[in-house]
Amino acid sequence: MNVRINRLDPNVPDPVESRRRAAGRVVRIAYAVGIFGVLGFFVVYFGAPFVFLSGPGIVSSPRHVLSLPFTVQVSRMNVKPGSTVKAGDEIGQVYSPEQETIVATYMRALSDIAGRSAELRVKARVAAESLEAARAYQRETETALERIAAMASTTTTFRVQILRERALANKDVISQQAEAEEATKQLVSLDAFSKQIHEQLDEVKQNFRSGRVFAPVGGIISTGLAQTGQSLVAGAPIADILNPNEVYVDWYIPNERLIDPRIGNDVFVLFGHRRIPGKITEILPVSAVFGSSQQLTLRDRPATQIARIRFTSEASTPALNSTVCVHMHYSKISTDISRSLIKICGLD
Image (cartoon, rainbow, N blue to C red; front, top):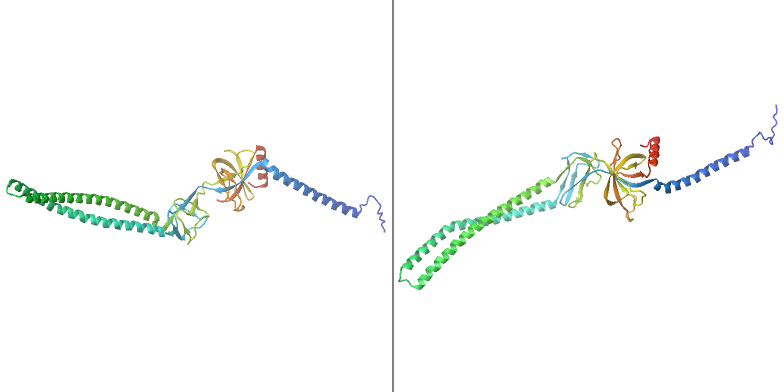
């Protein structure tokens, strides 16, 4: 059976026109998506600052900086970044030539005090034992002077000699007494000074603990940890111990903002694809320079005010020292819409 096909029949679609219409529809859809995408980008880019305030932040916690008042070299480290330590755990051991120099200085001072004390003891003993002989000679000169005064036949020259001998005897007695008393006082002072140096020496040795470094508090070792063989100046941190039980975010508030953040405002902490709710609990009365790893070192980094954000009790906090982004919505409507989208997308 032969079927006759009429190409001019309006009920039969033309395949060429059909392909053209389909291709044109795809092109129009792609063009519309591109146009609306560009418009949406500009709307979001330029309109977002009028909807919410966004700025960088760092996940922090109270930290305890462990350092020594000496120039040291790290001999060994028993922990690594991220390790959990308790109060009293040994972190490592260091070697300090400066500490040994301080101990040697104290020992040299004690040696000098010991030598000086020996000399004063010899002087005090000689003066104490010679004092009785000097007093006996003084009494003899006084007796001789009394006898000469009763005799009328003595010459003036002899009387002057006896008077000179009595004066020398008196001077010798006074000199021996003064030397014995002063030597005793100096010995007491040197003994007190020696005791003080002994206490300071014991304190230096006790604080150094043969170079063993212990954790004063419990917590987590931060990434700023000294390495084995590294030399550190006095006051340089050997380790930073973070408190994992009190985690917060230091938010560097941008200087360009429509409304100043206040204590009690709800915020969202963006960490990767997660949106963690939080609340501003404190606005610090200081400014700080935010050092982002993405910024060049030669560029001027802005100094901004810091707001401290606390997470809710059921929130899963990010890792310490993480860099996050904080959003604070200006209106309650945008906040509710954002929370709804977060719940729908499963980003909470």
